[in-house]
Image 1 (tube, rainbow, N blue to C red):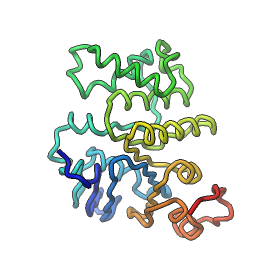
Image 2 (cartoon, one colour):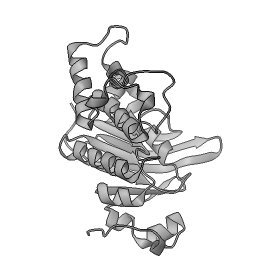
Image 3 (cartoon, one colour):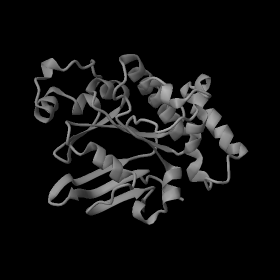
Image 4 (cartoon, rainbow, N blue to C red):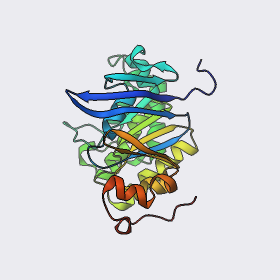
Length: 256
């Protein structure tokens, strides 16, 4: 049982390096259950590396990653996969597969892959497709979907895992405005209505400000600001972190 008040995810003094180059440098971050957090920053800031470290894919050179208060390195992979569902950047599917079979990949952490889908697995797949609005695509070859449709299918894979934590790396990359908003609205609803913890890497500052109540800004492998978007995406941080004139960045009106 997780002690009351323990963050569902936490990194403590984490450093990730390749050779002598530090990609993530002495970062500490806590994510309470039910939070919705966006990680933003320029290219090379360490956002995706921190995300992979949070999920246990990368082992930090120093520091500790904790899942429900327990060092993630001591937790078996299947338990981690049942707790954290990862939606990667859009990728090409290597072979023909109907959408419902793609979504069923989310059930792999729950049973050996050769045992076949049980009733509860099929229910989870159907529920995930319905939740993201792709039921009508269930028999389509996933390779023939639009980028927006494919991203929703990838989110459905994560939902089929029935994990309490949803982690996404650039979920709106390559999408048009309508599909960007659809994905962001879906993530907000999964967080607010279903109680899922959501952590996402985003490049679009306006989307982060509009759809995430908490934004952490990374620069040079460190977190330089963490809080409400009105505080972290202010003109000073936009100028110092992204190196652009804030007047050229179209941002929404942020509430204090």
